[in-house]
Image (cartoon, rainbow, N blue to C red; front, side, top):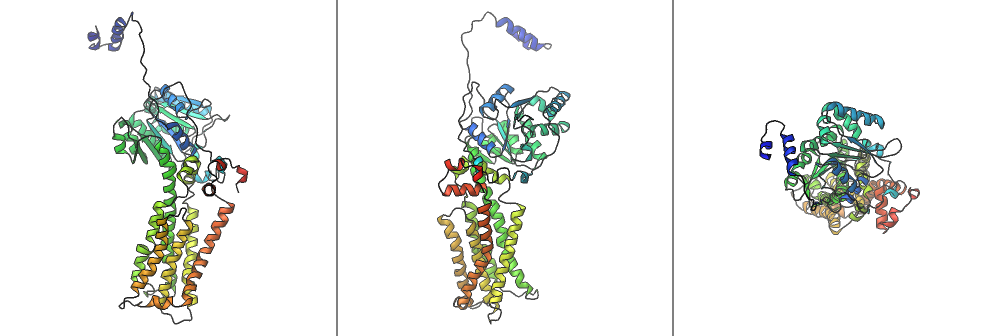
Amino acid sequence: MYEEASTSMHERSAKLRQAAGLVECNLTLLGATGIEDKLQDGVPEAIDSLRQAGIKVWVLTGDKQETAISIGLSCRLLTQTMHLIIINGSSEVECRRLLAEAKAKFGIKSADFGRDLQGTEDMYHGDISKLRPSNGHLSETGAQSLELTGVIGGDKSEYSENVTNFDGTELALIIDGSSLVYILEKPLESELFDLATSCKVVICCRVAPLQKAGIVDLIKSRTSDMTLAIGDGANDVSMIQMADVGVGICGQEGRQAVMASDFAMGQFRFLKRLLLVHGHWNYQRIAYMILYNFYRNAVFVLMLFWYILYTAYSATLALTDWSSVFYSLIYTSVPTVVVGILDKNLSHNTLLCYPRLYEAGLRNEGYNLTLFWITMLDTLWQSLVLFYVPFFTYNISTMDIWSLGSLWTIAVVIIVNIHLAMDIQRWVLITHLAVWGSIAATFLCMVLIDSIPIFPNYGTIYNMAASRTYWLSVCLIIVLGLLPRLLCKVVYQTFWPSDIQIAREAELFKKLPQQLGSRPASDIS
C-alpha cells in the first residue's frame, strides 16, 4: 500500500497519510527521545554587551518561529515586557496589509535614515554612570534553543533610537521567510525598513541563504552604517560576503563560512572581544594616525612654503635633498608605525567591563571634520613658529642658508615627535626607543651628512651646535609651537572630559570597576 501511495500520480500526500494511518494504530508508547541543542557558552552575555555598546543586533535563523523566539529569549534579545510584532504573510497583499497595520498601530512614519551620529553625540557624553558592567548571568528557561545562525550589527545611528511604543513598551519584530519572499521586493522594502528600524529587536526565522544576504543588502543600501554578519554554516556564506565585515565561526558545519569571512573565531562569544576591545583600539589608533600624518607632512611643507615667500618663488634650497628624504623615511616614520600598532588608551578589562565606551567610535570622537580643522590650525601655527623664530633670530646675522636649514630640520623633527609624545596613551620600552631614538637618529644622520666634504652643507652642524643661540632657538620653537596645544588639551580634559578620558583617569587611579560604575552623573563636569 505504501509503495502504491508513494508512486501515485494523483493525491500522493493524502494517500501517504492514509497508509500511515493504517500502520500507525494500536501502538503502545514506550518512551520519547529529546535532543538538546544549546547555545554556546557566553552568547547571551556577548549579545547583551554588543547592545550596550550601541550596536543594533538582528538574528537571522533558519529555525521555525517558535524556536526563533526561544533563541531570542535565551540570548536576552527578547524580554517578557516587549511587544512582539509578528509578520506571517502568504501573499504580497497580506504582507502589505500586515506591515501597514503594524506601522499605523505604533505610529511609525515612513522615512529614510542615514548615518547621523552627531545627533547622538551628547546622549552619553560625559555620563560615566551609564557605563555599567556587563556582568549579567544567563537565566534558566524551559525552552531549548538552537544554535544562533547569524547576527547583523549596524553602527548605532538615528534609526536605532525609535524603539519604543507610545507607552514606553519596547518593540520586537518577528518575521518569517515566507513573508520575506514578497517583502524583499522593491515595493515593500521601504515598509519593512521603516518597521524594522523602529524596533529594538528584529528576528527573521525560516530564512533562506539568499534572504539573509537580502536583509544585509537592505541595511547597506538604505543607510551608510557598517554591517557585520557572523555565521558558522554554508548557508551563511552569502550573508557573510554581503556584509561589510564577515565573521566565520569554526564549528561542526564545515569551514565554508570561515573561508568566506574576514575574521574567523572558535566561538561566538569571542565577537565581544573582537569588537569592544580590538575594534575600539584600532579605531582610536587609525583615527589618530590619520590626523597625525596629515599634521606631520603639512607642518613640514608649510614651513618650506613660508621660506619660498622670501626667495621670490625661486628654486633656492634651504634643506638638503637628504634631509627632505630622511624626514619621512627615518626621522618621523618609526614612531608613527610603533604608536599606530601598540598604543592603547584603555585596558581590555575596562573595555569589556564598560561596553558603552565603544560608542566613542560611533560618535566619531576620534576623527571628524572639527578635529581635522583644529589639527590644521595647530599645524599652521607650528609651521609659522618653526619658520619665523629662526628667521627673526638670525635676521641680522651672517649665517648662511644651509645653517638655517639645519636648524629648521632639527626643530621640525623634535616638535613633531614631541607632538606625538603628548598624545601617546600608554608608554612602553619600544615606544620610548622609537620616539626619542628618532630624535637621536636625526642628530646622528645630520652629523654624518655634514661630515662629507662634497656636500654644500659641509660642517654646518658643528658650527651651529657650538652656538648657544642655536639651542635656545630650538627650545623656544618647541615651547611656542606646542604651548597652545598643551593648554587646549588641559582645559578640554578638565572641563569637558569624554567618557574615555574619565574611564582612563579612573583606571589610572585604580577606581575601576566599582567606583567608576557607581559614579553619579552629577559628579561629571
